[in-house]
Length: 511
Image (cartoon, rainbow, N blue to C red):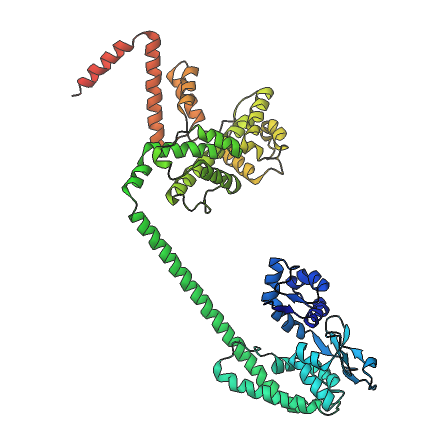
């Protein structure tokens, strides 16, 4: 059986009231209401969403709308003198002829309509019905007097008609609230029943004073409840954090032997390092996946992560500079954390290398103008280089000459580039220019040093000019460099076998 959601009278009431209501959902369905006076739950013109909105909110719309109207003070009601129904005016809501006309006005727009007594009872607020009864039975000027009273004492309507005006008032004060309500209503009613120009100040004073105290008690109770709620939220957050920490500890304690072996394996570390190297290049997603396919994935990883998930991580790193993979709940957290740590470390190293290279191209190396331009052009094409404005590169071409004459770094450079140059300039000697020394070195770079030097002193001098490694790493690097140089020299001189035999004899003599 079909259920009527909105009668024609309710429909017209909402249409007339809508200009005073900030109700987006009502505004959205208003075109349907204008076209169809009666709205039923089976109406074929209703979309699914419109039907759900009307069913859920129509009562709230009608209640809220009832508060938007008031009786017209200058003419609250009138009685048609004619006994003939055809001479009567029609109610704006039900469209029936009415002899007793109540004139109501929309508070927000001052739009006036004529409503019958039955529709006042159906659609208007308790406040309006209260005034309607007094105006009709006792005092035609009651509405004007009520307006004057509430203009002077705006809290009176709240006391009389707002049922939840003091929602946090402690229970022990509710009896006082009822006393205030009853006393205020009795005073206002007595004032409205007689035409009067004088407000009942003395009669209302004790009730309004008491209500001020109740409002203070309500605010204090609300503040206490807010503190309690905040404390409760904090306890819940602390408990959730403890539970999360406990869960992580349990998960870590329960980590399987297979997982520990995987994370300790060289294949795992090499694969993540290779993937991290791709991530730091900020490749287009299609290119990233193409390059990713060429990296051999350890068999143990195939069930844990796939190319789609790694692509999501690549997009996230390109956007935020880190990998959290919050959307990828099925990817092991340790794998995400490991990849994030390695990628950020490699990205920081790549940025430092670029900073070193751009400083050396502009200042550290003695280059011709053509050589400097070529190096800077190459550096500009990298991802790090594309993060700088193009206007920076012409300035880099002449920067060395400007610094030599005592000028400062150009204005308008990005803060990160200024900081990188200032750090490297601070390490320059008092006279002359030296390149920024890198904090790591590759075998290919060391091989270039050996091939470019005639003697070991020249090679080590060039090494110290270009690289500054941590002490332990530098000791190993220099030892490898010396041995490589000597072996290559032995090969060129044809004495490798003789040298090896003598070394073996020397080692044996230590036994």
